[in-house]
Length: 307
Image 1 (cartoon, rainbow, N blue to C red):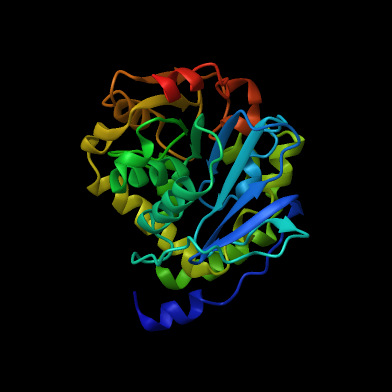
Image 2: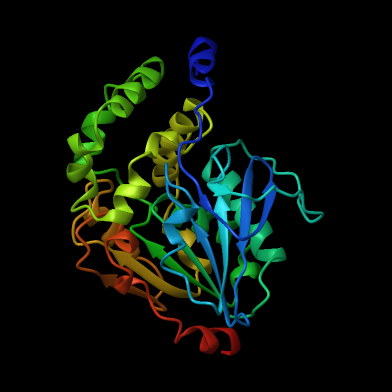
């Protein structure tokens, strides 16, 4: 990438969305991990990995039981979407050698969280979209950490996956130098102008979380790096990445205008038979926000932990 483009792209983006949060926030590299307080004795642990241009609030309403320990990643160079909590530097944090903004970097954040934070043995790691690729990469880096972990890959970025035809058509003519201009254009347009096309039927939670997408990262460079790395990862990663995946579920939407649904399904079918593939009736890429009913229950978790 040209230095002149990098200079344009590192202009800071102000945080535009946050929610009240009760718990601890740990800085890990240029990302973070937030552990929500829970009122009951924790019976299961869920680690949520958000998608491209999202934040950890994607998971908070889906996993609101008082007995669920919820641990939430903030990917590298993304704003931490919390009010009222001062981030801490944990003594278990280890340096990360990969480039910030890449799937490999964020996989290292996930593995540090998984190795140090869960207080139960019933562990689920749930990733949406790019978060699915982060989970697969994390398993590839440290398969032993995931030996007894259930994974939920929701509308995931997968090996041999593709962006939807619509997204590809929009991105193909965009050079690095055009990104700040394009993002300003999108941010100045009302989300109603493009929301229904990409996000499907809206509801209050979707409006809340998807209305400020292009303010999720700290700079434009992270947006560009995320997209380019994501496309490269889908191209260079093959089905062997599934070899260390033990248990879990693929959640496939009925309609996806962000990723290519057929490529997603074809890739998922190359995974081990211990992975369920659930073709939901969700009308968009954002399955959990469309309806919590698609999120699998915890019945399988004890069997996994003690199996």
